[in-house]
Length: 101
Image 1 (cartoon, rainbow, N blue to C red):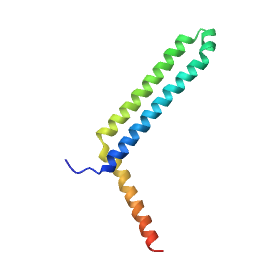
Image 2 (cartoon, rainbow, N blue to C red; image 1 turned 180 degrees about the horizontal axis):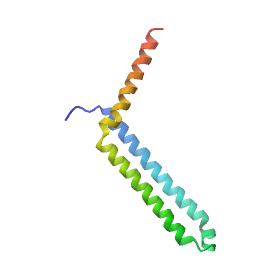
Image 3 (tube, rainbow, N blue to C red; image 1 turned 90 degrees about the vertical axis):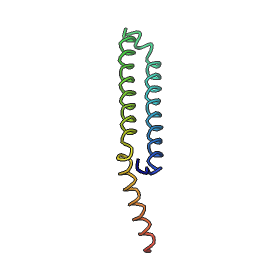
Image 4 (spheres, rainbow, N blue to C red; image 1 turned 60 degrees about the horizontal axis):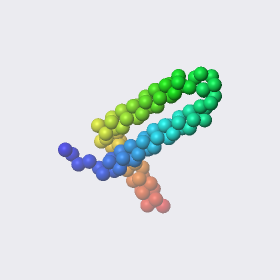
């Protein structure tokens, strides 16, 4: 296996943490909205259908984020390698620009 830049793992872990926070935020937002609307939904006889629809949306959202993270894990070097290449280019450009002043 070729040497892998440690920045790739750092970027991947940061993306995983951001994705987990986003999924948690969506779950909490849906829970709060459902709790806030409980009486209105119950009065309109929509409590069970809306709970089901909300659960399906949350399930699909969570599955899509999980699939995205799995894909990122499988192809870390290509995905993050491009970012690192251009970040290094930008850093060198700024470094050279500052040295020429």
